[in-house]
Structure formats: C-alpha cells, structure tokens
Length: 253
Length: 287
View 1: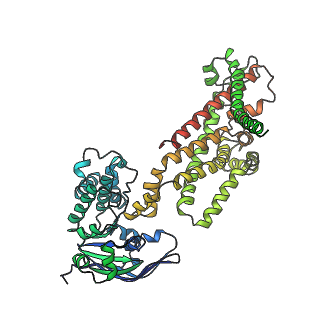
View 2: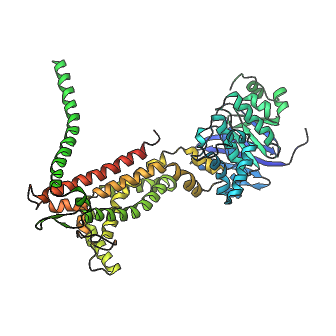
View 3: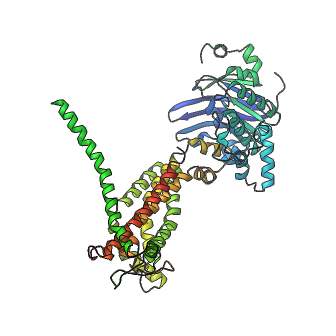
C-alpha cells in the first residue's frame, strides 16, 4: 500500500434504514485527508445516503435510523452539534441550488450565518471563494445580479464557492456533474483537483470515468454494501471482486 | 332527440356562466348610477375630504373623511396584530410543528374562519369591550382598538392559510442547501425561507387586509360608531362599511343621504379592488 495521509473520517459498522428499508449494510471505511475518495455504484446502492450520513443531513428525513458509528477526526459525529459538523463538512448537491439571492450574497450567506458581520471581511471571503471555484473572472462585474441568471455550470461552481466560504475541512460532492455539460464538468473536475490540496473530498458519482479521472481512492457500493475499496488505479486495473469488474466494464449499472 | 338534449344542456351551462358576469356588471352599474348622483350636489373632493358627516341635517353635510379614517385606523390596527401572529403561525405549521399538531392547528384555523362575524362581534362585545374599557380606564370600551383586535381574528385564517401555502411551495432544496452550510433551523427559516416566500406572504397580507376592510357586522357592533376623526386607537370610530349597514335602512330612497351611501359603496369597491389586484400581482409575480 502507498503511504496514507492522516485519517479524516473513520466509519465503523455503519447500518442505516429508511423506515424498514435497509439502505446501508455494515459499512467500514476510512477516508484520508487531502485525498479525493470517489464512490461509485449503480442507482439505489446507498452512495448518497452514505455521503449524507457524514454530515448528518439524513436526520432531516423522517424515518431515518442508523447504527454503528462515524468518527470525524477521532470524534463521534453524533456528539458534535449538527450545525458545527455541517460547517466543517460542506456539501455540494447534484443539482445546483442557488438560494434566491444575488451572486455575492449566495457566497457570503454561509459566512454570515456563522457570525461574520464585517462587510469588508465578507467581500474578501466572497472574492477568495469565487476565485477558488474558478468563477471570479466570469462574475466579478455582476456580483449583484440574481444567482438564477448564471448558467448551470456556473451555478454549480457558485455552490462550490458558497460551500468554500464557510471554510470547511471536508467537501462532499453528491453527483456534482450529473446535470452539467462536458465542458462544465471538466471545469468542476479541475476545481476539485486544486481543492484537494487544502480539503478532503468525497465524491459520489454515477460516472465511472469521472471516478477514474479524479479519485485517489475509489469505493464501490452495491445494494447498500461496500463491495470494494482501494486506490483508484487498482480498482480500475485489477479489481479483486467480480462485481466491481462487471460494473466498471459497464456490464450492469 | 339526443342532439337536442346536448344542445340544450350546452346552452344552459353557457347561460349559467354568463349569469355570474352579468350580475357583477349589473351590480356595478347600479352602484355607479346611484352613487354618482350624489356628486351633482357635492364635489368629489369635498365628499372624500369633508370632515363632517351629518347626512340628515339641513342641508346635509356629506364628508366621509372621518369614515375613511375610521376604516383605515381599524384596518391598520388589525394588520399590526394579525400579520406577525399569522405569519409566525404559518411558519410554525409549515416548518416546525410535528404532523399531529399540524393537523390540529390547521383544523383550528379553518374553524376560526367558519365563525360567523356576528358571533365574533357578539363575543367581542361582552368580553373584549369591557376588558379594553377596564385596562385603559376609558369611558367606553367600544373603540377602534376593540375593532382591530376582533378583526385581527378574522384576518388570521386568510393570512395563515395563504402564507402557509407559500412557505410549503418553496423547494425543499433551499432549506437543505442552507442547512448543509451549517445554518441552524431558525437561520434557514429567517434568511432563506421567508425571503423566498415573501411574494406569497405579501399576497396573504393583502388578502387579509381585504377581508378586514370589507368586514361590517363585527366592527359595527364593537367600534362605537362615532363619525368623528379619530386621533388614537382608544376612541370610538365608524367605518365605511358600518355606515352603510347602519344607515341604509333609514335613508329615504332618492335623497342625498341615500345617494351618498351608494357613493361610499363605490369608494369601498375601489379600495377592495385595488387590494385584490395588488395581492394578485404578488401571487403571480413569478409567472
């Protein structure tokens, strides 16, 4: 095995249910700092549920139940306040979700709710975050326009900037490119590459090729089970499980 | 035979549809015809800005300014009370309440809407009016404040149900997006949900105002009906609606007084029409 970075998330025997539906089955997994972990698998394999468990977003749904534990930096996430956890572990959703605000306010929103009031400081954070998301050049002259006027790809990068503005340590991407064209997708992937220097990234994707392109490690989920987890190269060249091989070859999915 | 039946039914439904428009038009023309006659003797400006309403003195003084102010002050009072409470209630129902309490609250609100206004007026008269008199040490509890409080109850169901619909219609993703950034539940409501639903909430408020301004029975029973210009909320006032209801019975048909009451109807009509159009604009802003 290659040398590993420090462990960021440690998931121990995680089971999850929605009502009586058993959606995650005995997951054990470690996520390392400053790496991109790609999670692949067919629809309904529990990828997104797993991702949402990491910052306790599943709790918003009635009927959700989990056992086992998730440690974040050595601390049980159930013992961390949900708001604090979500500030440190940000999410970028599948569909870009700008809030009904201006471009600048969308980015500054997160910083504002965490108590930053100084206008100058907010402007700095906004600019810095937009630059990191490679959106600054495209929007710097129209920061006060509604965020809905941006294109889909731009909106998605705006959402990345918004997540960055609260200064998280981990960013969860939930199929961030599923609604985007190839050019926008390339831009988002490029962004992720740069971001991993400072952040830990978990990427759920339906696009196997994307996982191969950007992931340091790859995990393959099937029907709520973690089938295989290894460095990306290994998964894509010499998977140890028959089913992983079948999925990445496109035999089912 | 069958063809004839089809034809007959089709025409019958057509006539029914036409009738509703026809009735509105007839009412409108009748109102205008009777109401505008008063302007043969009083100028419109003097009618609206005149400070004295003595319709049966000789010659009659027909200034409805005190009545407009009466309606205005009672409405403002009702809005100040019902909007914060109503919107808060809508937020609670839409966002916070557990399903069971939500059902109970919604049923309660509907029940509140079902109480006839004369019953509300009656309850207000025997409970609220003495209470207002006692607390503020007034000679009479029949004041604009009592009217405002009672009308706030009447506006509340409208405001709550429409504001709740507006909140409910906001994509769940907004809330999730805010929460994913580490916002607390309250922060997501205050900074995201309320602004996003603002046009619907404004429409709810406008329709609530429309309900209040057109209300007659309860205000007539508890505002004291003194046609003087009110300077505070703690004096008796008379509203436009109460004036028509109270005086139409005794006005001599064809007299100045009679025409003036119809003219008040036109003023009321114009106000409610403006409010409804504004509410409609807010509701359909996005489309």
